[in-house]
Image 1: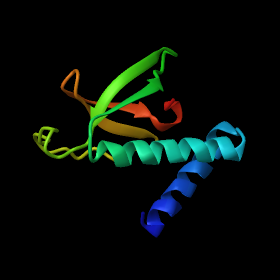
Image 2: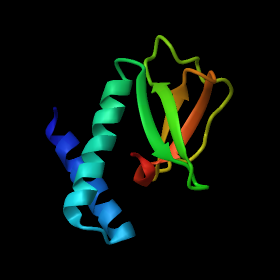
Image 3: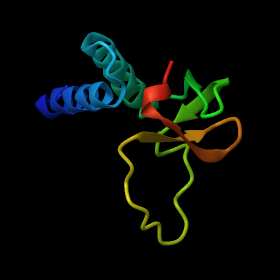
Image 4: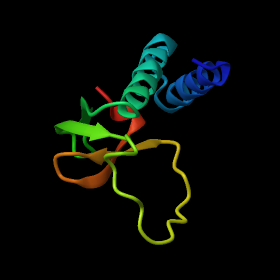
Length: 104
């Protein structure tokens, strides 16, 4: 783990706190869950759950392994969004995303 990882986790936790006004400890737990999920997705296919925008719970199998995900076609010049996590859904064979705040 790099020192910048801890800084990113704390920044994410404060962003969650400013958005939700929940207890900071809960926001910090959620930031750690998101960090660990992304770290694991870089090495394996991970099963995780998140709450969709309509309120239903979704089970997802996703990864960010470079040997599994297809290359991005075309010129992808979209602006990075810090409130969502993009992952490759191995069941649907598509790129998907979820709101970081909605990770279960």
